[in-house]
Image 1: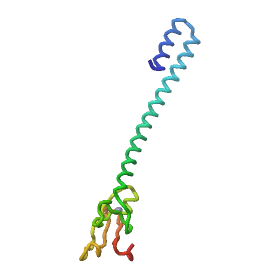
Image 2: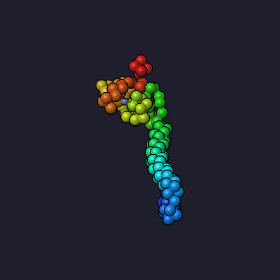
Image 3: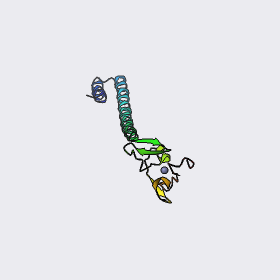
Image 4: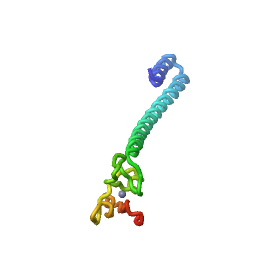
Length: 132
Ligand SMILES: [Zn+2]
């Protein structure tokens, strides 16, 4: 039985006793129980939201461990040959966006790489220290 239900029963008993003062007090307790129940419901919703936020942050953290920073860009940890760079600006915002070759030259290492997100506009040649 919830506190609210118990208070409801107490109101009935107090009404039978014909004690107006007691009925009023029990009604106050009942209202208090109802307010408390609503607050608990709000808190539970808040807890659920925070749990889901924690879950998504954990996933982001686990995801981040799959990449490493080298030559001012990110690489997948299994990309030892460094074939596909990822945008460092987007990575700082928790988004993993691959970089694409722009103005391709004879080899990947001679090319300028740009972020695939057109609004980001980050570009670099990871292998050319003079551009970074
Ligand atoms: Zn970017």
